[in-house]
Structures are given as C-alpha cells and as structure tokens.
Figure (spheres, rainbow, N blue to C red):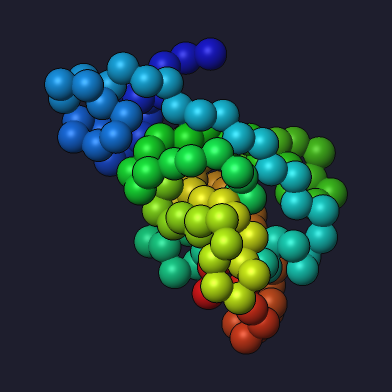
Length: 138
C-alpha cells in the first residue's frame, strides 16, 4: 500500500499533528473498513456539516483529532468500494452522553476521491439529507 501521507490530499501532509515526528510523517494512516447497508444507516453516519463531507465510523480504537485514516467504504448496493484518505474531525469517546456509539468522524479530503464519495452519498440520501432524525454525531 502506498504511503498516503504524501498522496493527492490537497491539504498537504500533516506536519504538526499527532501522526508526525519532528515535522515528518512517520506513521502510516490506520485503515478502516465501513459497510453501510441501508439509507437509514447512511443518514446516521453522514456528516454534511463538514466542508468536504464525512462519515462517522464506529471503532474502539483511540484516535486524536487530525489523525490520518484510510477508509474503505461500501455503500448499500454499489458494487465498487470508495477508498478515501481522510482525517479525524470528530471523536465520540466510550461512555458518551445519550448512549452514542463510540467512534470517529472522518472528514473527506477536497480531492477527487472525497468529492466523488460525498456526491454519491448525497445522491443516495436524496431528500433524507434534510431530515431531523438523530445521527451518530449530532
């Protein structure tokens, strides 16, 4: 697998965050896999309030804001997978209020993969985007 820290992410490599040592990225991003089976699950996980969109990924692993993650996403009936190199923008810790699921919010990059994934999610959600149902984050 290629080192994603120098990949096409238009925001550039993180030179001061938790995945760096002395300003040089030395840790490969974690790889997470998420399979969303239905529109309700997609609505609960989608984070439209992030500039490039994002998804909540349930996980027990510890992360810091800004950590790089590589997400392999399966969306409902789509045959292909959506690989996205994103960053942690949300953390729901264990034991959070309102019995929220522990996990992280992955902010999509501004590159083609992030734009394509955001567009496909919004296409699948359609009018459900404006729903007031609760989600994993808000």
